[in-house]
Image (cartoon, rainbow, N blue to C red; front, top):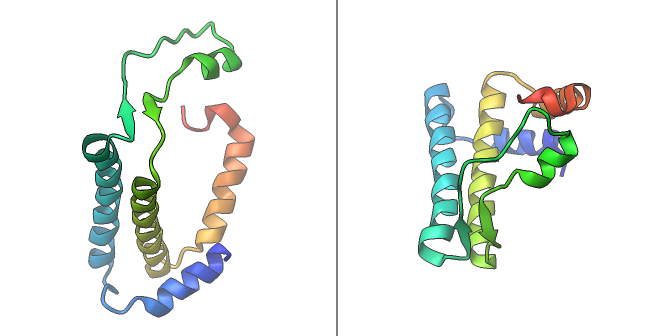
Length: 128
């Protein structure tokens, strides 16, 4: 399914939360639910662990060296149950993001396309 189709589907389904304030609060709540699902994978299930320490980074490193040395701090892999929970929460988040786009008359597919072009143009420096 394309993003535009999904955005239209969300618009057709959204009845209860048509207020911008409702959508903003539900979008924020869905972000928290994603965080909670990941935390539960660590603290309740234990399928993933967080091993964090200071990142060793030097401005003299090449991009490839940095990619090899910098850690994501995760050990293990999410089990199917935890992954399903995170995917479910991400789906809700996309639903409310689409709702927000609908209320603000923003085309989600166009937004993703613009961000992708920006990433392609700026490359590594996009988020730094």
